[in-house]
Length: 226
Picture (cartoon, rainbow, N blue to C red):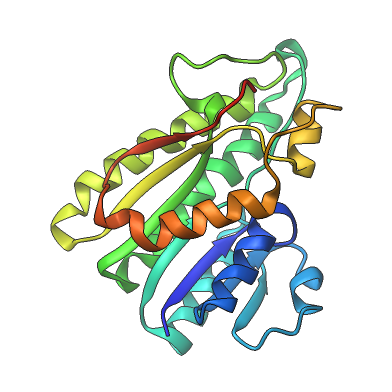
């Protein structure tokens, strides 16, 4: 069985991804602050860890688990995200730090810890946003979120170059509107054209096959604005 780590699995896309990978005979390490939703499914090949991505001590638990139980990681999906929706003049330094701790620094630190367990053919997929794409339409209130999503795109491009000789692929999916709780926080009342399950289907397919075609690429996965 192959091994996949997914962050942000308590709801939305991450929750659906964990179920889909487990149903397709992957060993799943599901990381989120709230383990209850997945634990209630009682799927034997899903292991949940209560993790705060902004905590180095919590991330060390992931390393300890992988070292003890797996020895290798085939896929990482950096799906977790934190969004603050405030006018720019009301954003505090702590608002920026909280968003970047999850959306950028947590991605970087978890990837650092997992590098020793990634092999030729491993695929690291970061879920970004259309808001992080240079030249895309931007929306008021999302300065911290969208700038963080732009930063993580550049990080992934750099890692693809740094680890290409090792055969480790790094790619980004910049997704548009999906009907999730986070979308409601950003655009209250907006009805997205895609459900979490539909987007999870796409991400599953890309995570398992995309590294055969792409490395260091950012794919825009959106048919609407936002």
